Length: 198
Image (cartoon, rainbow, N blue to C red):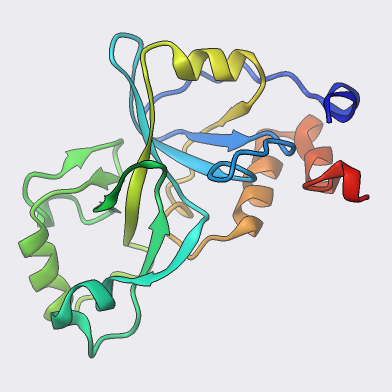
């Protein structure tokens, strides 16, 4: 594995992490949670650490199964946000002040807020496709940890992609995000997940 990483490695870019930006995992990262993952940063501070949600790992769970009031609605998927607080449901949305107590991530995206208001909004027939995304658990880094992982080339930092982060994303979104990193990263898409199987 180390041989392959040395052959294909591309050093991290110089984009700084901040809320709303993306973390794109390098192609050989073998972590069960973060292999070919794209993470939306929710919080980032040199003093306290970082928090984010994996955008492209859909679970088999739905919000409908968790909340009986939603049983008659089209399935609302739940994504695997990360390994921390894996028994708690979180949401990111683009509804702004419609949901009180939301925390602004950037100019277009918000984190959590009054779930009862969101629930009423959904039950009143408002469209949430590409506007609200639910996560089980989150991804967290202690002070300095994310910086060290970026320096060690586990992640490249992508700019905001507000138009797509709330969509129905799978591994194709990792490829999309890699392409958006720029030309020198595009060869990542061709790398096998496990070079030993090639």
